[in-house]
Length: 283
Image (cartoon, rainbow, N blue to C red; front, side, top):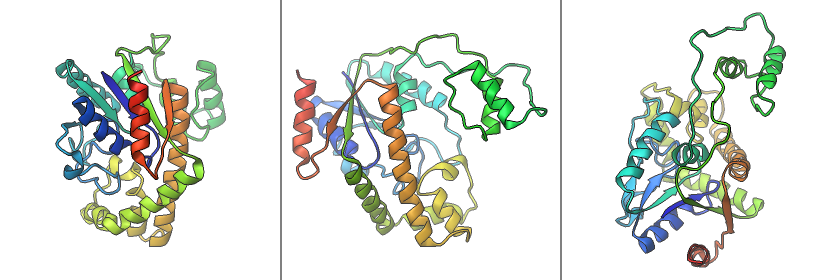
């Protein structure tokens, strides 16, 4: 059995994964692009050793923050794990949909042409129109010149349709938007109480400005605070805002890219949610 537990931040994916792993004697594989990094713990809501309850976990804390760990790297690492543990039950947990798509589908990475063009003579609008001609479904913003040029320099993917390589079940946890946003806001406050400022400060003090730290929510905002660009309160509010926006994008991605069956979370009695998911799996 391969089971994927997905959904936005703060809905209880980790808790559900542990309970299902214990029931089905499964291993757990990380599907969160920030939790692969060592030291990014509080801000990524990474599972603690005690929370693992003895369940084997993989692809957590595998690279340092100064490593540019890509989805291509993840695909290679996770495919090796899938082969090694092919006779075991496997549970993926995380909110990075592209990681799951790369792991479980025939996801092929575009190759860039040997001769790349700079397109210096074209405006952003002209680049955008060229990109649309290449692919009408292209969704790169018009002002993102770097990505547009990279897109134009890539060879077309030879595979017309992305299809699954493994028989996987996708379980999504959800709740009404207001409840989710309140949970995100509360969890951000908890992260600050748990020491998020010190965690980020330890990297900033070493002047570490890697891709992981520059893009991860909770870290990039506090870097602005330490750089005296915004106040601490502004950083906190920005973390909450960016987390809410990210949750919205996660819903959109999962609904469009993966065959997810969604379950409304009972936060008053999470056991009800666990039972509902198990009932669905054992039908």
